[in-house]
Amino acid sequence: MNKIDLSIIIPVFNTQDYISDCLKSIMDASLENVEIIIIDDGSTDNSREIINEFSKNDKNILYYFQENKGQGAARNRALKLAKGDYVYFMDSDDILNPNKFKEVFAIIKDEKLDAIFFDAESFVDSEESNMDDFKNKFDYTRKHSHGYFSSGEKLFNSLSKEKKVFAPPWLYIIDRNVLLQNELRFPTKIKYEDEVFTMSLFFHLNTCRHENKVVFRRRIRANSTMTSKITIKSFEDMVKVFELLTLKFEDINFETSDAKIFYKKKLRNTYLTCLGLYHEINDVEGHDIYSNLKLIANKYSYFGLIGLFATLNYSVFKAFQKSALFFRKFISDIHR
Picture 1 (cartoon, rainbow, N blue to C red):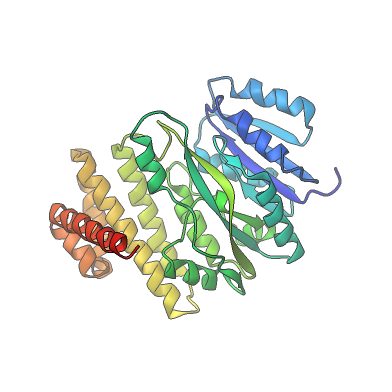
Picture 2: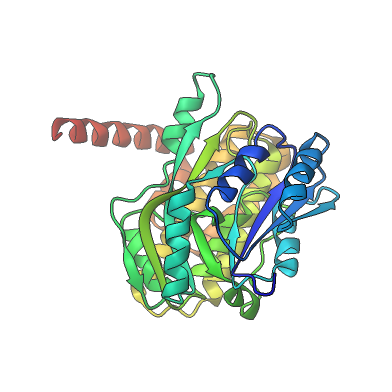
């Protein structure tokens, strides 16, 4: 292969039950001039054997093994190896909608965009009753296509108005030069690393577009990152994300006042998530981290009355929030 149009990057960690479906969905898109870079992040199951079977029939599948370093490190390594004009980050337990993926990839090439954003749907891969709750929680669809924008900041504003800014990197395809020129990489050794990466990306994009096409199907399964039990590590990682987002906030030269307001709301919501995790774990080890978290929030006046209210009395704040959500749903049901 002389020229590679697209590098699809897939970190893998013990997903032997799902990697076949993932790779088949990519194959079904029948894309030309594509490389699939798989970074096995220390799997101990049969993932390697399954991938090797696929690579025997498709020389564009490139397999690399590393000791477990986390998803961020795996993606960063793959970026160093990538040769495609464009990059797409896939998760090994999920699947593509092949025809829709082919459509959006044609758009980004034809319009020579820095990035194209799209939507996803979740499906439950479990018979456990509580999994349906997660499906409703992880909704990645928008009401309409937001269309073309001359900057990522303007797209960020538009998505923020709909309250539909999503972090996962499988919701967009990017021009690889944008990542190289701006030295954009994923934070390592933490979960939720895509929160920092995607927020940073918005403010380095020029031409971009959003299409409300369901291109990606996210598998909701037990024991994944988003459905596993909350631990002290979850809290520590989210606080690290909050700290990195605040540093980005101070570095960004905002072109519009709206973007600055929306970014600050993102900080507030991340802070509230940190508070929620802290009260969930109720772990003495988290006290010092919690104190530092409040110091940063205090610098921003707790992001307004909502943040201050949650800080002073989180249990009352949650009860009030739950009542407000119930009331909103009640009003919405009446007007249907």
